[in-house]
Image (tube, rainbow, N blue to C red; front, side, top):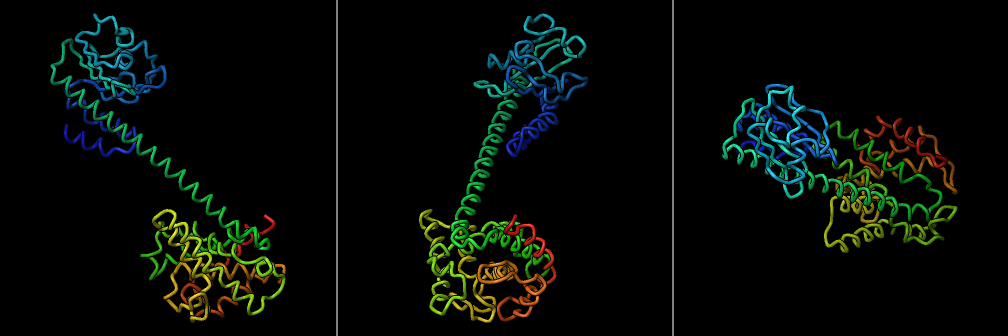
Length: 374
């Protein structure tokens, strides 16, 4: 009995609870058959059974026409020593079975969601300890089913929260994109580049241990916020149709710090941070750093630059090169790949460039799939 209780406390869905009852209850009760019945509106559904002969597994009966329904409607345990003399029993349903006596216990008597029945092939009243044991099994099943419902509810709430978060990410990222109307699907392309690059990097050392599924998913979802700081750049600079002068470029560079500050404001409002916000802030702040230390805003060098910023740097530059802008034509894919390769060890992490070159055709496919015209 204690093992059954432990197993049910760990169950994660209704089918697992039913399976545990099927495999254990009959021997614990000393019965010739066990049925697990679920309520389905005005019907009873015989979900499972373990018996010396076939009973009603998979069948449905109106609540008012079967003894399991009676137990649930009244919220009471039913003990019937002889089914052929009890007016509550639909005799024709039992005539072709081995059943002569039974006990039916509602699962959660105050608001029944099911019932567990025990059956015997001989007439006789089961002892009080057997009835009590069946009640204990039913009570344990009720607790387990409540736990499953709670787990499912929490999972649904978490999924809804994640969907809301993803929608907010795209909404925030789109603020920058709508300001800079030439970027088109830039945020969608770059997040797909980032995921493709991270997944390829994971296939080799030293990234196998660090780039797990969770981190890659966070990279993918936080990448759209890499240019969120552009909301703070004046239109005269952000939308200038030509090359920026030195002073204008200094203003443009502040978008990395503005992006970091915006995400820090979100963290402050929450009173804490999350892995997602930490990574988004890291990407926004460091994706313009360069491997040789000549980037901005801090002039980080080599592995001082977080890996998320190093990955984003290649994704961002590649997309800028192969995309048409009001001030420049699109560069052919092959030429963009060669240019990035030539910047290995200066602008970009050479190990990541090596991976990028291997999967460059994937980048080309992503750009075509999410072209500005799409």
